[in-house]
Image (cartoon, rainbow, N blue to C red):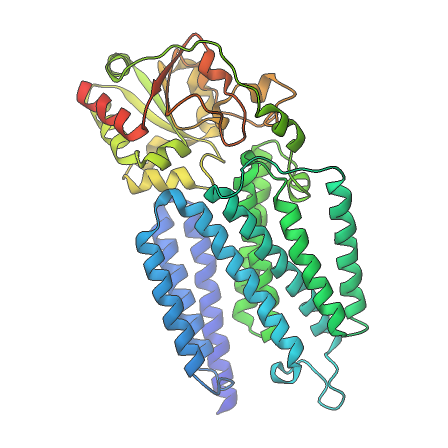
Length: 467
């Protein structure tokens, strides 16, 4: 009977794993993302039910209480969270996964006999379990503290500027070597002092790795922490001897790593440099204090409506400012009005627009913007030189020509959307403040740029009325 139950559990885990893979495949495209989410939810439900029904469970009180409390919190957050706060929510969830890995490893270390990872005669933890436990607790601690810093930066509770100090890379290297040394020593001596020392240092290096990373690289950080949370979950799986958790963690970890690499490649960043403490932090910190007093050309909604209505082709470039103002629906209304006037319209999405991968795509999908009108950077950049108007709504760093012309800029080398090549650039922005990377946008001062100051949603609504 027990063998049958184990086989059924293994089969359920296999089905869940297949659904997780189908979920990731579905999430790779806006057209299939809803189906991908559904697959993921069904797979997770199967995995949870199969785990709860295993013979190893001896008491359901704490399990039911945990599911109830977590479920209520999840529903409340999902209903109340604004789309603008989604990146920091993701970072907060990553921190919970990291802390879960730490707590499971600590419980396994304190009571290895309950986890079946020790010799019954001597009480010594098996060597393989020590390796898994050491790596799991370290990755989990780094994920937790790093995600907390990312949350604080994204929430605005800590400055988005790189926080740098002399010798930080050498300090990070030293702490990293000590942690690896302690993991090795833990394989020989399972002393509590060694376990807690490497855990504490992992928490510390998580803070030190993310603090120096500036705003321009935060989308990569969110993606990277997603990968860390996956590997931390896989570590939990090994400790709990749960195949579903191992597979799920490996899928999340590997897909997050691949996404981070793709984003770094799209930004002309080195993933290694970002992980070890940011890119161009010193120059960014220096650049943020410079204020440019050059005059800019300022226009009204009526001016913008006249220009847009008489344009043959318009490319809309959304950014975080659109998300803050919740302007996606007003923007869609404006776009529909322009299409009724015969304007050829498309949307240009930069890989790191917003605060996390896919942020703009989600907002546009929420406003039911047709998928075939939305293009990625590599597909749309060549079209700007023939466009009559580039309508930039809240995107700053990803349109800054300094990335191509100023070697001292912290965003130098990052591929940008070539909006300056359009005949006219209409730039919607609240004011002249620098972008999240702390860099003044050269595009503001170009002869073909007209600034439309104000809340992005209100500006779009005023343009619609003028049209």
